Amino acid sequence: MKKDLASQLSRPAISVVIPILNERESIESLYLLLRHTLESMRGGYEIIFVDDGSTDGTFQVLQAFQENDPCLRVIQLRRNFGKTAALNAGFKRAQGEMIITMDGDLQDDPAEIPKLLAKLDEDYDLVSAWRYERKDPLSKTLPSRIFNGVVCTLTGVKLHDLNSGLKAYRREVIQHLKLYGELHRFIPILAHWQGYRIAEVRVTHHPRKYGRSKYGLKRLGGGFMDFLTVLFLTCYLRRPLHLFGTVGSLLFLFGFGIGVYHVVLWFKLGGIGFRPLLFVGILAMIVGVQITSIGLLGEMIRNLAYHPEEEYSIRRFLG
Ligand code: UDP
Ligand code: MG
Image 1 (spheres, rainbow, N blue to C red):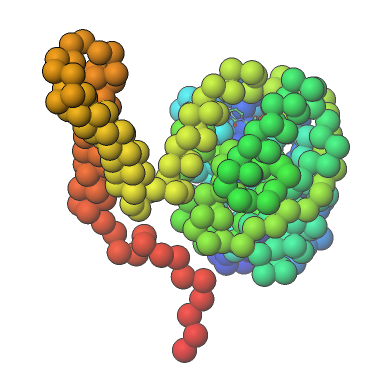
Image 2 (tube, rainbow, N blue to C red; image 1 turned 30 degrees about the vertical axis):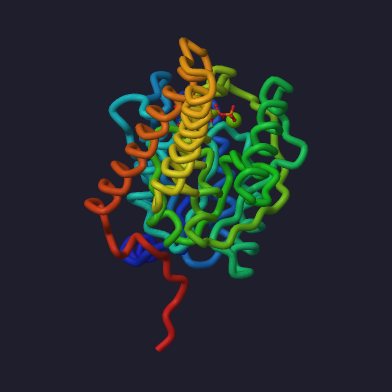
């Protein structure tokens, strides 16, 4: 009892955050396995389950465990807000110096947590699990492989498995992540962009034993839009005119060149009539000016929303 009170008052070394939606059958085994792993580790721990609007009695099971375990916290969201929001709710309340996230469906193995934390100790800020031999159907693994390949090539982040639920973070990483929509899939990209050091370790993965996957093929379309957002944010958030101004100016110059060509024709031949190319040129100039203007608007927003402390990220102070 004394020990429990002490661990409640001081901050635990490890917080495990688990977003959970309708995973009633998995909870007991997951909870017991987690406790088994965490109790053998030093520094104290807390487990935070975030019930993301479950309707299958998940919350009642969690509540029953919570009544007898001061290291267990349960957050119940009013409705299903999505995995990103659930992670945010858990992060906000996590007190540990290191934060572990994992899925609540028993596909991630709690026994792998020490491996992730050991890697974090090698002076990394975020360690992502690489589900080596992922135990999911081809309809999930194939799009995921393509997603990982495209995203990693275009962003320069060298990971094999971006979207694994099992990850370990240093506290400062989660404090600086801005997660919304479905951006949880891009956490390593966003963290890498902020200058955090990222690594991955191979972990075992299990097939889903109970319940159903919450993500189907329909996430692909949305995933592409999210990727566009992330690409834009990581490349041009701080200098929107560099993107819009470049595209707009090139388009304008293209249209202007066509215009000059028609002026020459006009002098040589007299009338230039309704040549289709003339219209292409006019259109390109108008759209070019508009795209450049969007960039200028972006710069105005950037200026008004300026926060000096968001312009950089400090790794450490000396002295
Ligand atoms: N999840 C959640 N809210 C949602 C969808 C999923 O909290 O809206 C949880 C889910 O309960 C699980 C984790 O996020 O713990 C990963 O979901 P799932 O296993 O269905 O994804 P998959 O492994 O099939 O990609
Ligand atoms: Mg799963």
